[in-house]
Amino acid sequence: MLDDFELSVSILLSYPSKHKSVTLGNTLKPKAVKSEPVFNIYSSDITPTRTSKSNITYTIVLTDPDATSRSEPVKAQMCHWIATNITLPSLSMDVRKALSPLLFDAKSEGSDILDLMRYFPPAPPPKTGYHRYVFALLAPADEDVISKNLKKPKDRPHWGYGKIGAGVREWAEENDLVPVGKTLLYPLVVTLIKMTLIVIRSQLLLFSKQETIS
Image (tube, rainbow, N blue to C red; front, side, top):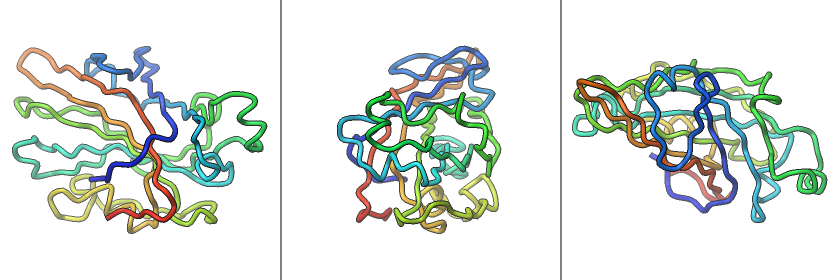
């Protein structure tokens, strides 16, 4: 789906409607993830200048590589969310580092975020077992490109490509985007009694500008 890449910056996701944060090993019921999450992006000591530029438009996506089930992923990947027009406040890198490691706060700075694909809450069909849900943060492949006019996927299953397993990688390539970070929600368990969401800690990871999706 996406290649592994080196830890560079981090992201904290939360579902404010239920006051639930996405942290290592916590459990969330499906009703807690019905509305789209908010998120903060944080820098680190090794955050590169490219990642923290204020004039680049970033895009966050959510995909399910296990639709309809991990044993029979006939609808994978399933597109659950594409939100774009994420831009950092206009501050110099020196000022940004002096003030806070926080690069972006969706609650206070997310009024311009646009949903290219509206949020479709994680809700695996009954008896389909564990599902993985992956958030990825994307940026233009050319670091000198300020923003992109993105093409909306034709459909949610297979991200409209009509091929099992197709999704984020193909859509990013088509729109000249590269991943600069990702986070994993794992797993969403469906039983006859209840559904449980186990979440692994959110992390953003960096690709160098020479690397592309393959």
